[in-house]
Image (cartoon, rainbow, N blue to C red; front, side):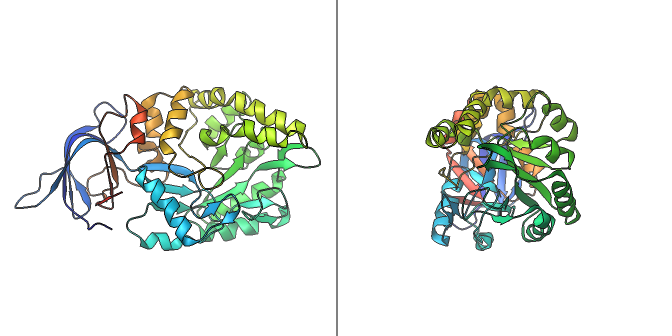
Length: 365
């Protein structure tokens, strides 16, 4: 791990999404950002390029793979892969592993945890979640709210084997009690939702965010916009729906057809949500079946869906950090930033090749 250093950063420092939110230079002194030229002798390393706040992956699973919790060495590799891709802030949207030890490592990304998934019995991926019945939901939510970092993760829908298709996991009353319990504990609630049917109950019960949100429709989009409920589309994950449908076609043909339809309209769904004013944030869903380090791919997918490049960038930088209550490139903030050779506002594909990464004022990667 490198020592914390002093840096003089020259080029274009993008402090926000607006055309006036640009500085020509900044300094990192004792690990913190300043825009005032230091006085007196100060040895600095010069870094040149286009500067963004450390990227945010708002749906990521450090400590998890396709089979459940992983060991610390694997968790470390996952976190390092994200870091080297420029992701310096992660909202860990559910993990069965205890990754608190990462908080003591100054060379690993900062993590905001949602605790462990909370799912209906036999209605989610094996070894991932607390699998419970509705009568216990509020108690488990309260417990995970106390264990997490201000978030709780529900599984809002999953395949119902008797129905042969996606279906809501929780009755309305249980969801209302659970979300109220989380809010009493000072935590926000998010939910995994692929399909249409669970969304109205969750939003009207006061949920704060929905993951994937492929089931948004003309009826529910205005409700999300009115209530300010954010979505994290995870389009790099939604891209796997056709393969999943093919694998389940023989046993669950109705589900397979539904998954294909959700996939086919994914870009239209995300663009309609954005056009309605729903907050949209970048998340990759890495750590289940997907590899880590895909944040640039997800930003490019948002652009492919029709979100303007600057707003897609904001969904992983300025707006995402504000949503999660973390600083960007403000005076006095710890220096978590990424430097690129070209303007990412002109071509978001630049995000795939960071020139330099500073984490807590240290050059890493």
